[in-house]
Amino acid sequence: MAIDSDVLVVGGGLAAVAAAVAAAREGADVRLVSHKSSTLRQASGLIDALGYVPATEPATPLREGPPTAGRELDRDEWPDPEGPLSDPFEGIERLPDSHPYRIVGADALREGLALFDDLAGDAYRGGHTDRNALVPTFGGSVKPTARYPASAEAGLASDPRPTLIVGFRSLTEYDARAFAGRLEAAGVPFDVAGAEVEFAEAFRADTKVTRVAKALDHDEEIEGTPAREALARAVAPHLHDAEDEAGGVERVDRVGFPAFLGDDRGDEVRAELADRLGADVFEIPMGPPSLPGLRLEDRLYDALADAGVRFETGNPVVGIDAAADGRIETVSVDRKGRETPYGADAFVLATGGLVGKGLDSDREGVREPVFDLHVDQPADRYDWFVDDAFGDQPYARFGVRPDERCRPLDADGGVQYENVFAAGGVVGGADVAREKSASGVSLATGVTAGREAATEANE
Image (cartoon, rainbow, N blue to C red; front, side, top):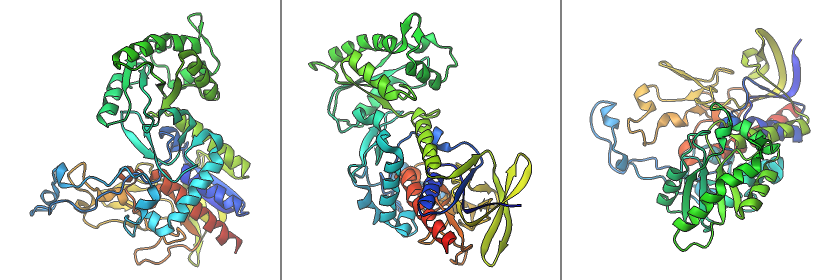
């Protein structure tokens, strides 16, 4: 017997959650099935919409010669992407027609961001404006982003207040002094200094940031001192040193930490540290393991439960079990080695792209493994990439090609299955890493696919 629902969402990331909640809010009975834990825990926790419009043509003609030599370009032969954009919506019209934003429309991005605001609640900022914020991130870059955790709010690059960046060599590879130097080089409008402090030495060398976060949550004693007090004591001398180094700055008004200032009680931890230090405290999003990503994952999966969506992880969809008349009837789900049919009136595929394994690739080509959907790609593998690492890489845009309802199209441009919809990284046409648009594409296509899947199921 098949396990049935109105809409079955395949995937576990931001696009899958957006699609599932959007479908549930249209009255559909929704089930979500994912293979692995969400990739949200590996992400920064920032929600980007569109930060840059990449150049699609080199500044000088391609050199003559065989395929590989003909694509060797120096970095300065490619014009820089346009940006950072202050208004992500203003840049949409300059994207190619094949871009997901052009296909589903700017209103879909607005709807996706509105849905995210509703699900994230007071844990995120940025919903008050269409404009991007500039958020410092791990490595010293400043990222244009549409929504950002409340824990990062005091660190926005548009804020001119003098800043101290704090690092812990024994805990992360995060180098606070180098980070501060890169921020200065990026032209931020504030004085910034970095300091490495001793605090995490009390923990084992292999301690994860989640362990330190829990210690701060519960204010555990570290060598006889409560964790929050111990951290403030470790930072305070460097705060005064930074004020001296700034030359004429009366005080440093804010302090940035790697993002591990508590998990369940982060607001409380930051408030106490701010009180003890006499300066605003903010977190800087880091690479994995990402506490902001974990916090966001928890909040979004709570939202799934609140919306009445049933979900399960660890059970991959391994292929089509039955199809008829241009429609999928059931798919096969691997449940601990046993294939079980899952039926639905409509399906949403949100398994990610090449990085997330939603697309498979080998020397023969790139394929979508669940529904065997058509993936646009050049027949010649030399046309998949350019040798310049900084150039416009065609493979970054590989994925299924959707119509305006997010139904994947076949090689001839026809709808491949009437009741299958695609969302997120599996959708092609966007170079989300260069554009800083991954979350926005997931939300825009997720909302569209979920709503359309519910409509299909209700017909």
